[in-house]
Length: 389
Image (cartoon, rainbow, N blue to C red; front, side):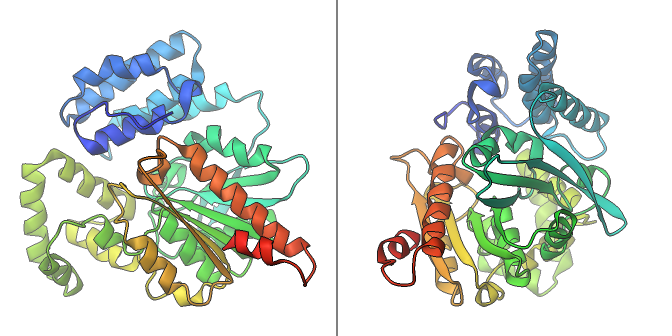
């Protein structure tokens, strides 16, 4: 499904497109068009009410997958602690697993640091390899299911997991960590895996590269959106003194700046509140100061795997120049392939929302090219090597 301009505020429009991009299995486009006129400004209460109305309607009509996606969207902009948020998450989970009760997926709980991670496995019949996949700052593994089946159908067993700060682990109080090699290692240990492809989506583009730098069982890694420097990417319009104040620990200055911005813009207030919730931070400064760790400049030379970097030219979260900066920093990688998706082809938005098929096709083609290199004899492999590059 093409990326649509349905709402005036870009972040709200993007969230609506996150549902639309999965096509008729996830939603009815006419229902999204029905509620769009009532969502012309940032109003978390109205957002919840409209999506909740669609979810209840879909449930009443037995459209459980639609209901799951609508419940998911209904809770998106609600603050931590709102009873509707927790209830909507449980409704989302309930509807999803009812909708997929006859499908071949396995659900696991993985012990982790006194708590647990959530995982889902889609097993391929004639397995070519294993893909381990995770989201970023605010995705749930269940909402990735519809398109992740593409990898399974192409012959790859897929294990999706939610780490600290994501999905059910976050609901249980497990806050996000930049040391992503730790939850990845727990997943690899649990499933006894030794040779995997790791795919990280959105902020997961940073998280996956971080894990690859320290986890040799990852042989191939995909940064599905290149997060070279999260702090600068998500605050791209801020002046240099803003970043200097964070790095120099000027707490009062940053907290005053944030307080003013939050009063002036409800979306900014939500972004900061949501960030504090996910990272377990008490103040805006604490949240932003933690984000200084979420960058790949220092760890990139440690990455020795085959790497695929994906980016969209009109990504509203991630500056397009991050792609070349990241590529240049991977001085030890076995191979590097990059793909910049353009507006002309339709994959220019964040994480190729609107044309997920372009990204999945690119990943599968890359994996196929790498398998040609591994299988061909030592001499005469020029074509396969060129494909991988």
